[in-house]
Picture (cartoon, rainbow, N blue to C red):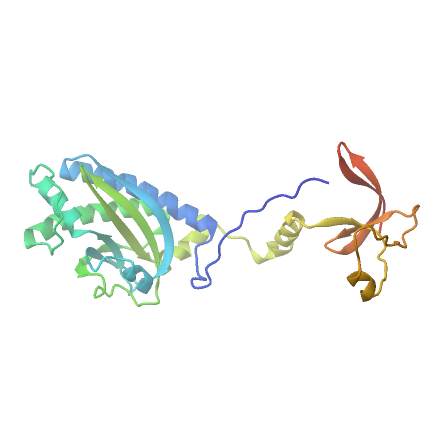
Length: 288
């Protein structure tokens, strides 16, 4: 018999039953990776310091879970989306944005560590960077983002931002942004209702008509245990309890009769004992 195929085990979180299917997740990852490259190029051009943006993961959270994962003080760009009440969010540390502004104004790119609100001038400069970032986001998502988006304001407290209802689902992409010597983490959160309708078209899921075929394929690929067994012998419990080394138990299986081949305990065939190299094997002589 061939060795059992080892399947891939995926962890299922019962606290978050709504997750992205693998095909849709891959489509979003590719789109946000494109956005990361575009954003990095735009930052390099605007701040005049080599910049690199890397997408690290794409997950689905409720807005409450997303907001709870953010620092209490951070820059949150609230992005209005045409036709829906929830807003998208571009989030990054205010200290990182202040470093970008310093470079834009001719500074030496000294890393800023202070977390504070932007002044009016700083907000205007950061707002222009965000306008460019939204253009890159629209380009990168392509047909996945069919609604118009625009910068709607800034918020500096993640608990008071109220970009969406607590139970609204958000597609959250995480990024690492490196501008000169400054390295920071950022996120982009987009309401799931904005992207999910288009995901089915970008990468269609299986229709219900394919269910029998998919089920057969899954059953055929599922590993099962196969055993070779003799006719069982009936003995009293006292005989079992008194078993000792050297005892002989007669088995009511005639020497000339083939053994049973059982799959998960169910007899399906008959076979004779044989060998395959240095290992025992069985030769199937009949099926039930």
